[in-house]
Length: 245
Image (tube, rainbow, N blue to C red; front, side, top):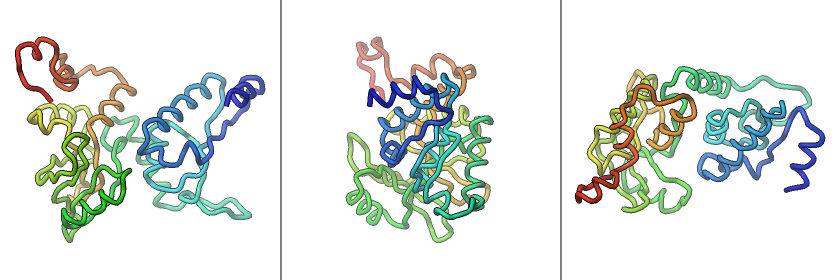
């Protein structure tokens, strides 16, 4: 609360720890994500470093990397022990890859993991039982994506039989431009991210990509018309009775 922030300003610590209350579910709650980002900005202004405590899932780690948090601890990164242990290989590679993606501007920086299954009925059942989940990726026996089942904020649960598929090394801005070329009804649909072998790597959302671009540089190569299309119809279009997304 206020007293804790007062202590931070008076003591000027080298490290500020965010406990599990802030970290838990940060990938699916924009308010928590924004709060972590705000704390990171404040910490950088007083020459301190944020430590995220209680990281228990890959999705939480991905969100923290996206927010620029450089230090973290939790069961996903390693169990408590008397001596310091190295990071598991998979986690170390994920951190390295996503950190590089922030600099290169490809899709690695915005990929989200999600539940996968082979049929739409199972996907719909999963979404009904998990309010925090919004997307389920349908895959075949070779782990190649075959569709998406999404919880849409207006329509409800729907099946996207032919979602856009892109390589995870693709340039993020180029992918955004492809999204803008889709029909208005599907412009903001999630996209499927795949590896070079065609196997699923995760999903990416348009709002996540836009946020990444805005936070990591001006939209130098996006035309004004494309930005207007992304944001929706303007007043002139509304008066003319044209439809938009």
